[in-house]
Length: 106
Image (tube, rainbow, N blue to C red; front, top):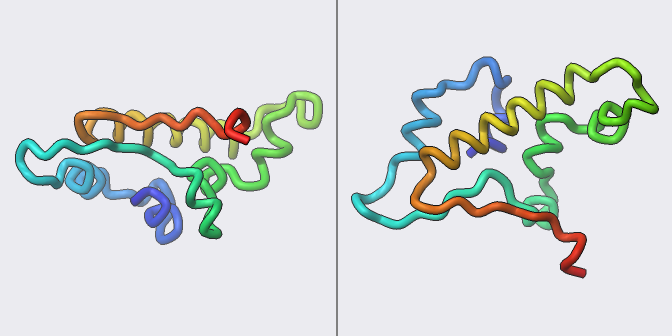
């Protein structure tokens, strides 16, 4: 849902009511596991949520050695990523799936 929102509109134009309705729209007492991003998106040719939010700034804007001033793009992207995870964790279901990274899975 958030990838679609990022593709179709800017983050300041998001309808929070629609986001809350989408996250809570399920059958009564149906158990749901919620997650904010999937590494499978990169496998099928799409970018992960963090890359949709920060894109190329992920490589240059996170280092104080390359850029001594804080990157507004990275700061905003991290804040939005935290907000998205909080909304999904709070409204998404009875469980939250956390991705730990795949560097140990090879």
